[in-house]
Image (cartoon, rainbow, N blue to C red; front, side, top):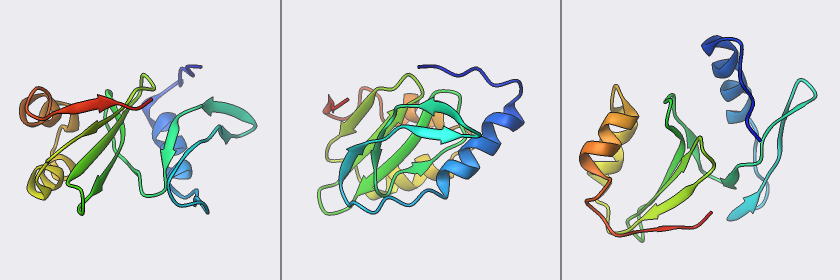
Length: 116
């Protein structure tokens, strides 16, 4: 399901509220998020996913033990990228444009698998 927001501010308000949701169960789970009584999305959720402000990327997570970068896209797709150095993850998080950084430094550079 896709929700179209009236403004970017409204979308960012939803992201802000959703980032406060605490997942009690560690690991991967499916979750339907609700905002002001409306279903926002049925995105795959990992306990430590960090929401990012991007028109393409929705959230990211990094497992330093396995050097695995997990990216969830607004389209609903979730991908794991393998053998990604922490510096690449840090660059993605701190980039002015997360989507541009993803296309330049991650996409096509690492083995990956769609997991959702």
